[in-house]
Image (tube, rainbow, N blue to C red):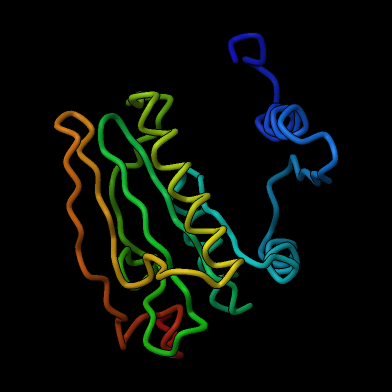
Length: 178
């Protein structure tokens, strides 16, 4: 909400969640965590939802999920383009985020604060991430593992592409590239 501009996102999120359900426990971490702390946080999770807009952070979250064997629900939105997928490395042939987006890839980082984002798109991708997480937790249906869904919100058109494991992936294949 506009009255929360300037407030840490984790505080705003906790307020919103408590207003929806005051009986839930919400634990927030309002700090940049290193790989060790991230691994500990992921190890205590049933499923991880990546809602960040920073490439290095996405790679770190993916690496922790691969190492801990925790499914990752990845969502992104920039301008009018959204994408969502699941990386469930509990499945032996499943890809990870680094199979699709190389960790050492060099490109110009663009953020929502610079490029903007079509507000409803964040809600659409976020609701789908919640649905995928609940399906994984409950063990129902078929997750998006192996499929990347991309939404062009200008034309409200979805495209789906298969995502396959990279046998040379530096994160999940066991081949460490230096």
